[in-house]
Image (cartoon, helix red, strand yellow):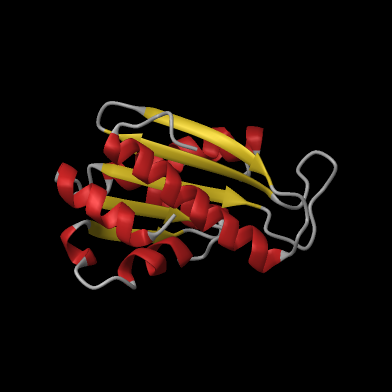
Length: 160
């Protein structure tokens, strides 16, 4: 999945994108903005690594963080909603997870939660990558996000 395909799909749809990133630390925004002309479709990115940043910048509810933890679909949804509400974007994507090393039995290394918000939809999903290493989890998360955005922009929910 390439950032170029995502940019082309967003441009065809007339959509702007915002990102809300935790464990990827800006890699998604970087992948998009590495492509010349991406300013046509990329509005802004939020790197909210700490819980305080998630609350302050995206409006994630402290109670949600306390109840479910930062690595949860509930937080991923609120991150995506917050990015959408705090931008001029038509679609927002979020990612929060444990790239490693570390984790716990309940939230293992390699667990990443994704959120996607548009003006008419809000979805979240979790992927467990295992423990292939920090760089590998982050790279796989970027690829997953690009695929999610491409599916949403093209309306093709059948794509892998």
